[in-house]
Length: 367
Image (tube, rainbow, N blue to C red):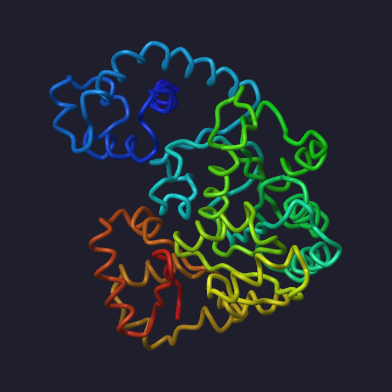
């Protein structure tokens, strides 16, 4: 709990954002030591100037007081705080340079298990968009898929409700603290998500749902998922921003096409036309393009004679990634208790042997 005070406090220092906080952490070694380093030691760190060092000293007491208050809140309301270095921090999000240094979540969601699909779109969802959204989720109901969206009007709430109805977990990424739900109309859906998914935010309690927060929220939706689907969008809109961010994170982006005359298909059509999203018409299209349609049996077969020739370390790695989605290299290194450099060389050798296949985002699965 003492470490958590430091972890929250660093987010309360003016001028120290997520990227700078990670830079400090990388050079100093621990979150506590960031606050204990001398001025001279801090100034030796690249891109850490006089202003930030002064802020660390000037705002230290207020930052710790705010952190203590937040710990009281999250303890009372059974909220989990996940710091960037924690094992349970979402590994997909960890790949993103500007990922939050700390996140707050309430619910029962494992953010490192299964496949994650983001669904976004206009808040003025048409009957066509609603049908496509519900159909996609219904067709995915037998898969180990978690639906991620932003709990907003339109496509977001349609996706959350459809996931709940189909028995799929769903995660709502918020643009405010966990002491409120916005819009209030979606409170009952949010309550259901606590037992079938989670609510997720980077914001402390008492943070209002201000407009700029939702722009920041979009990057988390993009970073949390394996694939992002834009259901409907006008020529301009938040979902197009989310798609742009997802592309910058090397996520797979998909969009439902619409008629040229439809206002709320203009954005999707533009994404497809500009090769920023792949065209899909159903869940089968999504699964095929993501490589998810292959049966688990075919994915998990390794010839006994080949297996016998492998080293013990190679056998252990194969057992680890014997999952439908494979495993991220950071997780492999952590479970094997080996440096990433050694894991990388092992995986390259195993790739040459035709045993593993690298995927986007430093993921590996059985060939």
